[in-house]
Length: 418
Image (cartoon, rainbow, N blue to C red; front, top):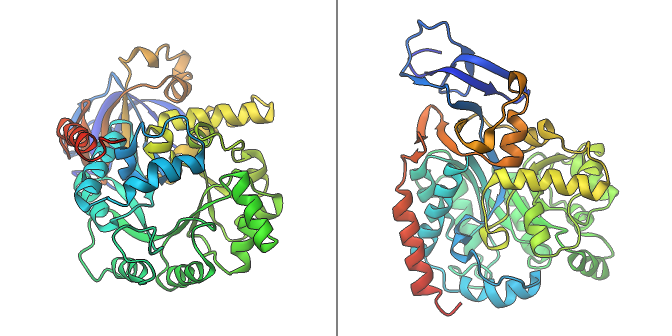
């Protein structure tokens, strides 16, 4: 505490425990906070009379540069959407396009209160450098399947070797960025690439990410070919890295598979909006995952299948679909939903209490958390490691207007046929 901290006066504050407090607070660069006595040495004092202070959102499954594809292929089922709308344009991706899409994604994340993303997309080094400039945190899992990856020749093995060099830090590592390995899915990756990716992840202790059990067809096809469901199949290959495997979607998962995930301390990422939009027919069963003691996280998926990287909307969707699917209004109440969406966050954001969507606060601010989750609200400030990424509703680490103009030009010039 001290000169690296900021004093915010007359503010509301809700930390991970969900307790609503009112007063003067000091937010320190290490992510801690304390009640201010008013005489501490601080960087500055901010009037918080119109501010609610909370932890930031953590987005555990993204394809950030797919902001380039937002609004494409609307109304198509998943595989048709991939084969007709997404895969054809991805063959022509360049580092320049990836940079434009990533910068737009970073602007959207910061403006909506997210300071971390676990990403899987092409030209991973470009994504890392771009995000580093914005100041957000990220784990970037580069795809290692030659052929699917547009910048590496099919069968060369160069994609995996490139990610190994990034993970081992043979080149400069941008700030707040970690690298990991992305194995797209069991229907894209053969046994050899799954083994190699897992071995490298174990050797380097990096994050290993995969799409698992997103659709009923994926599950049925895997069972027909191997006699096992996807997570069982991956376990039979000794694929999982304990504590660092991220399994996105998990919409069609058996209880046995849930126990496998829990046994490996894998992160299962609930992506309700994407699953519903692409009509996957099933979303993760949160109560069953919780009973099995699986570590569940929340993610938006990419802007192509979600149209948004806004974790406010994703948290609401998660809460509502779980209540609806299980006929139980008690599932994912505001506090548990908030804890799911902000789990492990060390960063702070502030919400604009002058936004009409935040009213009424209720006695002792008891309605504030529900208002943020279910009504929306606007983000004023974003602090990461004590650095201001956004202040008074304006993002400081990148030019949001320029990012918007650049992605508009990219969409018009490069994707005009779509």
